[in-house]
Amino acid sequence: MIFVNLPVTDLPASIAFYEAVGAVRNDNFADEQAQMLSFSEAIHVMLLTHARFAGFTPRRIPDAGETAQMLLALSAGSRAEVDEIADKALAAGGTQPNPVQDHGFMYGRNFADPDGHIWEVAWMDMEAMPGAGQEEPAIA
Image 1 (spheres, rainbow, N blue to C red):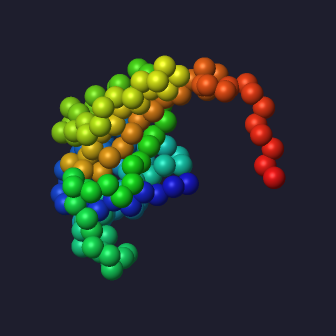
Image 2: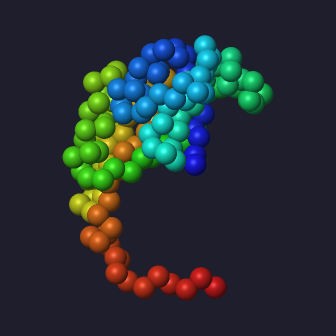
């Protein structure tokens, strides 16, 4: 499993945003400073107020609208699902900070949540990918 811990400035607004995108709330891991939401059985997002997040690290919390420390990515089952998720994010108040990526065999869109954390949603046709079907080189 993966748990992505994100510092947020407005916990109720962030919860509403992630629910609109399709994440499911898990109130077993929630209080007035934190809320867990799940994209799948393996991918979970823990939204934490800045005060709660600061309890995990002495490092300064950067403004995700101005800096990028990481780009989070989710896979989708089709191009249509990519569009559906990204459109939900935009309708819920997210922004699209980067252009659509369409490489034929791979299609992706991205969105930033209300705090500026960037997520990419991508679909790949593995059989159409360049080099598909070729033997993998041996690892020495």
